[in-house]
Image: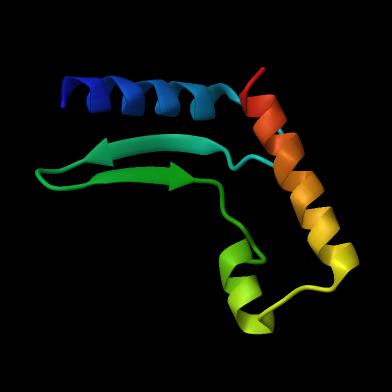
Length: 79
């Protein structure tokens, strides 16, 4: 469990300090006895997963754009 706590603390630290248009900003966090709550940047257009569920599949150009955006965000997180 200590390893999990350390990993979570590290993820919170990283996401709190990253500024990139393809990475949600983490404004803060808090917890209670059973849950950890993350205060994230508001996404006006909602979640990508819900958009995919609504459309079932994206046209190739849209899918390529989403993958490129995700890859750029991941690349920034791993710098």
